[in-house]
Amino acid sequence: MIDILPINTQKTDTSRLESVDFDHIEFGKVFSDHMFAVDFVDGEWQEPHIVPYGDIVVSPANSALHYGQAIFEGMKAYHQADGGVALFRPLDNWARLNVSAQRMCMPEIPEDLFMQGLKELIRLDAQWVPAKPGSSLYIRPFMFATDGFIGVRPSFSYRFIIFTCPVNKYYTKPLRVRFEQTYVRSAEGGAGYAKAAGNYGGAMYPSKLAQDQGYHNLIWTDASEHRYVEESGTMNIVFVLDGKVVTPALSTSILDGITRRSVLALARDMGLTVEERKVSSVEIMEALAAGKLEEAFGVGTAATIATIATIGYEGQDYDLPVAPATAFSHRVRAALDAIRAGEGADIHDWMVRV
Ligand SMILES: *Cc1c(COP(=O)(O)O)cnc(C)c1O
Image 1 (cartoon, protein in one colour):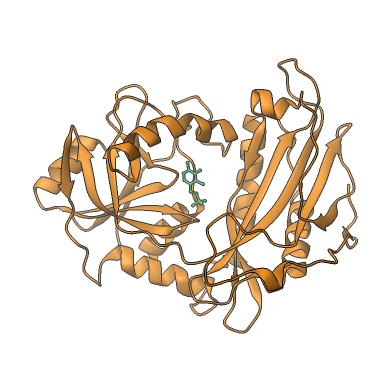
Image 2 (cartoon, rainbow, N blue to C red):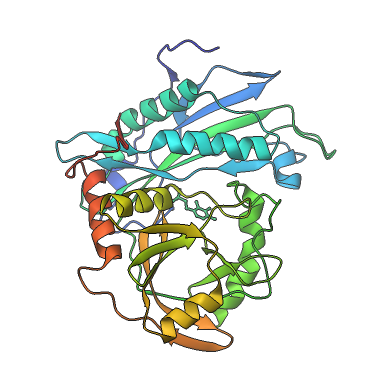
């Protein structure tokens, strides 16, 4: 077990902070000065380090590159109204990383190692947390196999890294999406509930076909019947149907999103009825025709709430009604934004100070 000592830290002597134009940052292209790294060797996590952000060396026979033992998380730190920095639900990300690790035969990471590494890294690069409303520091923890061995079996060695990227408000024009009825992202019994690298590689081709047809994203449906809604792109999906908040129930083919969880909790706080159940594409299209589909939106860390304006179904596009200012999606976005900025009452204790 690792004692809670300060993490061995090698600070950069050439900070890139001054060269960054915080008003014009493209998502995922600007990286903060430092990263946290720790290796797993001989059945144990070794001494962790914080080092300048930079390239890493791996064997050409690295088994993550060949067989995909690679998992990740996505989370954010927010500048607080009082000048501090806080993380949104980091323990949920830690727990989910370990769920993914178990599915991929990778070692779990202890809570104290994850949290200490995360907090010390964010404290060191605190000036990289943008203060402008709507902006945040995107955090990417990830783990991959490091054995240089070309046989198909779980690696014996792994590396866990955390790096961060300042990001601006994620602009989404209302989305055009369509039901996917040929390809699948994941099947029951597969690894869709894990944030495992291969799930995303496999989704790129069907997503590209949809983009070539003018859609931003797909609505994935179940693998056996292409009937029940799963997710939209890399977001969970939520509908407001006849006054109720409805979302597909979790399964082994759906990613258990932390934004989804938060949106459902806030809906319950607002006294709304929440249903986590099977939702078919037919039910959605019938509700839309009957004027009972009030709202549809994607939910995830990057965009928070991404409004869906148009749904493609069997070759035809259907427009959703424009949600009024009092709509649930607007209220829940505002409530989440306030909690994250340290301006709204955090009754669920979601925020963790660094
Ligand atoms: C990460 C992810 C989500 C959203 O999860 P959050 O924890 O809310 O960011 C949804 N679906 C997929 C497939 C994802 O990878």
